[in-house]
Amino acid sequence: MSQLQTAFQAAVIQVQQRSQRPDNATLLRLYGLYKQASTGDNAVPKPGFSDMVGRAKWDAWNKLRGMSAEDAMQQYLDAVAALDD
Image (cartoon, rainbow, N blue to C red):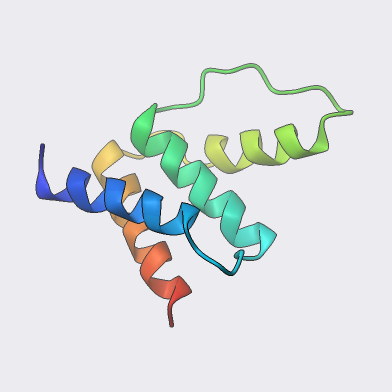
């Protein structure tokens, strides 16, 4: 496992264990980056109109289409580091 992957996994755990919840925009950004890093491009059908949370998550992930897993991991790490600023 690469150093980037190890740091990414540690950051995921760090976010889950935070005592203070980040704002919704930050959570959506982290979600999209996590999904892009761990799964790749979004190939899931867009949720229906009545599923607003699902659509927001889908949009956050879909915006990152074409980004490499390594870039997504690095941006996730940068976003987590910015939470502590």
